[in-house]
Length: 226
Length: 401
Image 1 (cartoon, rainbow over the protein chains, first blue to last red):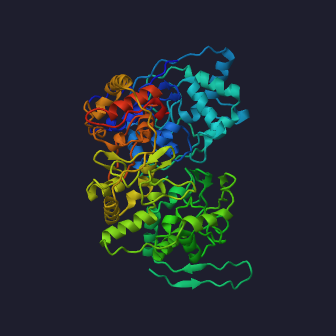
Image 2 (spheres, chains in turn red, yellow):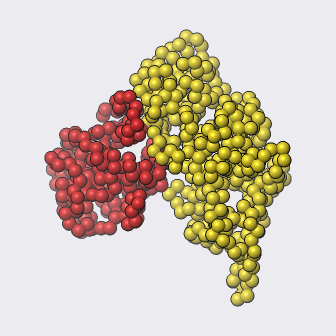
Image 3 (cartoon, each protein chain N blue to C red):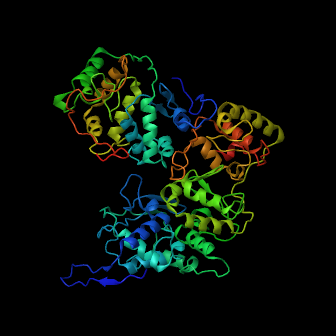
């Protein structure tokens, strides 16, 4: 594992009155491809739906999502500013790294693929695709892509949802889904997702392909009443 | 501001509750909301991510952890049944509705300075916030402190109720500032060390206090957080916007500006800054024992720190510590020079943003350098404390852990 360092190598040049300079503290850890850190994994933010990023920033600020560094970082930032940061990263483009395949048995990959593309009706688990888009690159405005993320990051998030250290605005559908996944299912779906190449068009879908199977909560965007 | 009081008498049976219901105008309630913000009541009485004023926020102290109570108008779990008189006694005398003494974790030694009409306005406002049913959590205190009966003894020793009295030797603005700083804004609840019994030491050369692993610097020293050396306008700007020239509020003070002080009217901010500007400027007691560093060791640390500075800090803070649009100057910066290195170490290690306020809505921020080892951290802190004319004592690894 390569340990990247927060705060080093952001290489922004001379400070200027730009949004990029304003998000320098973010870029220190959230590089273009994400980074393994001693304290965990900092996912890439580039190209993710703005609504998704905004929800995460507000969740960190309001204590629904726990990460010590992030909780401190956004503690005194306004909705308007967090939204501006979210839009900045949503519009930023960056190449994806090649997927990392973890040695896994064919049964694990088969089950992971099944959960991601079909779900498991018997266990009341919808497929990932039904909300996160057919290409699994996310759906505007609030649903993130699931490809281009490392296996252990996906597993950590599903675990955090089960443990309640990652929460979303009610109804917190991912909490319910994570609780329905067994340990081996969690591992299977994370392994399969992490092994998928990122499609040529990595941008989030504009609309869901099918009627989403569950209602998921999100916070109001600044200036909008939902 | 004296309100006509309508007493609703319990006429319908033993379970109807008689609560004094003062008739309040919208102006009074708006004034109460303003005062509630300046007192930062929500800052303690709202848990992170919790309902406003419903309490449950942990407040760490030398005696254990206090959990703030619910002050929403819920009659069972909040203060919905409190009369205006009971609310006044709480803030003025530190007494709960049942007459028992309140722990001074609630800064009523400051709130007692607040005049009756202002307390009544806060009461009126708090009756308009959404009622939340949320049971209070028991404080988690050590054995002696958990005996509430001792709090009355504490009050007898350390607490003297009394509304602020105008000092005719000063003008109206100074008096307004004194009223706010000593009273509602309760600045010294954090900016003055507490004695062994938890009472704030005030008006002397006490150092600041430790708050959530930060150091709240003394307001009585221009080398710490004192505003004696600043123009009054600059002090007011820092209070309202969280930033003034090369000074920024970070850590717990950023919380205070974000939730409370940014709502100050310009007049009140100027008044507070004027009062703080005119506080006596003195040498405060040392808060830390800095281990001495030998000359060869100092030179090694400066060389190592200078290299880190060049690689990671210089782009924003400048080759001569002169700062840039995105980062404050470090040359001459008293957050760097202050004897106690706690805050500068926290800022480097954790990074963060000053508060986003109306006057500074899109602050630049500091990246976290959490990967630095204690040796590297001590080296870079020592480097910035001893370069470009800065002349603060070096900081050894023992002081940055």
